[in-house]
Length: 287
Image (cartoon, rainbow, N blue to C red; front, side, top):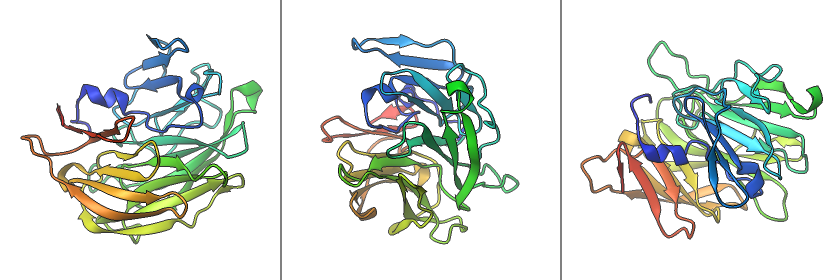
């Protein structure tokens, strides 16, 4: 999806909201770009980034805002901006909308999962699907290492990823993507919700079948701040809003949203802080 260009994407490249503000203090994205959200509310540029990517990426810091690592879904960079041990060859893609997403293992301060989604640009470009890799930052003096790589969950998927905490009592996290029901066909018609617990990733997903038959894998998947609404932008296949039940992982109540504009292909998404509005980026226009 190399032709999309919009300033709003700057705010959407690293979409996962984690447990505290410190963990999202640093963002690395684009062509060696970076932002630091300071404790006093100011924002400063980071000029030390090793990342160079068109679209999806992810960054994680500790509770105090100290950088741990970041990735474009292909290479993993440690806190010193070097490629992490065993950190090359992940199955993301520089032109995948949400190429990578970092999720901490519940009840662990050292184990993290990098979920990746590939993209297929033509018939000769094999889609590597939806996978996860494991990072242990306790290794190599705190610089970390990738201890498991490209564990396959779905053979063929969209370019979409998002995550939400299940609830305050059951210490687990849902990771969601959109993919074909059979994991193979080109028609995207099913939500998959994978649960991450203190023992790892459950490979048996909760599946929710869509009424829509999505043919365009591009575009963002976003949950609102309360975790009960989920929006999916599918570029030429339209914009949809759903209900999400974080207790069960089930997605329901599909609603298509028509965009009244010359640029009708939705790509970027973000809910307002009060969840009243859904902002949609359609190529170069903001609705």
